[in-house]
Image 1 (cartoon, protein in one colour):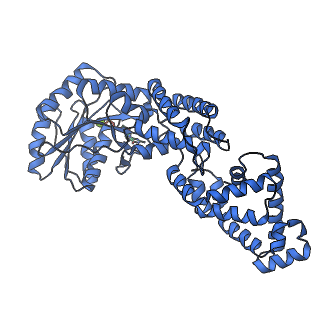
Image 2: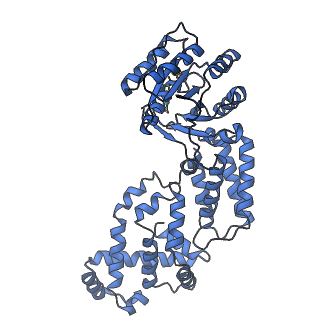
Image 3: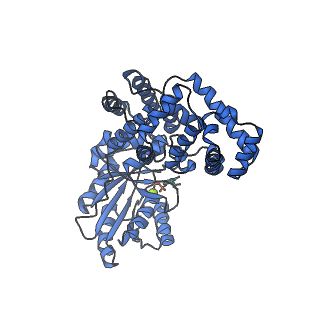
Length: 439
Ligand code: GDP
Ligand code: MG
């Protein structure tokens, strides 16, 4: 998936020195491939990569962010822009009652979405009214009638002998009579777009001018959904798109491409078969979801707040000179902890959202507190020179900190291991240190 793919891209970027033409180039190549593999339209990919590159190269390097994080931040923002920047609400104006027309191919999820949208609007204080206008299949009318009954939403009693535009016209009157203010028209679909269908939808639109026309598209069909959306929009000028089946293993390509290819916003997404599996579309959230990086922005903001840049530079210098003492080890941990619980931090890191390692971390916060306590129980001399910590000192430290001798041994072992690895590292010590501590 796109998220997995980008996840590994950013892992590769992580730990590199600074944003340079070169590492950006490599990263962007990966991002480009990942987007294409995710079925994002090639024109969209081209524009996106150009925008990311322009912003990334030559940008000042933020002290507390790794190059990977910085690129992620930029990619995230550009993906958000690509999808329209902000949520665009459904248009309920112009006409009493308001009328929402759902259009789309057969099987895209129109009838299911009609029910979901009704529930959503009811939650907003509207009084929805469902109108089945797919007269070709009696089952279609039954399906919506059943949905309405289950959700306690009134349904217009359509019959298969009436013309859809006539149904729309009469249903509007009935809707107002029933005390409802928003009718939702479920129209017929076809397996493919054809002139007959477009003509029919055009007649409904002409006789009962809708407040909004929402195209229902199946995200699982990827680029087909995008092409279909374009064709529908060219033919009847829709107001927006509802992208369904986002719960499946849709590759994200449709969500990313629709706005820039059709010029029309995605207004809602469907995330399951149930009537509540439906939400307003927010480009920024979708960008994060597509990247699979949880709430990266929050992480970055926290990092900016928490990390004492001057102190970090000092520690880095010490690391390089191999003067990194247990005291420094503790400082480093305290800095990391300022960002929140380890579990919180990990869940915000790209690719970590669903990681099984997360569970294993449950105890790590306690672990950190324990380590801090152990180091606090050491004398200054011991902290600066761990080699003097013999058996009896270990016992004393354990007692003083409420830990066991095994805990003390373990800590000293970890510390010496880190020191050993540090000696192999010349650059970017702090960041690598962080990673060794499990970040
Ligand atoms: P229509 O022909 O456009 O009216 O499509 P339907 O509403 O009958 O839906 C076709 C199938 O897609 C049904 O099995 C629905 O349960 C399913 N479906 C619709 N929306 C979603 C969704 O968001 N997620 C999932 N997983 N299935 C959906
Ligand atoms: Mg249907």
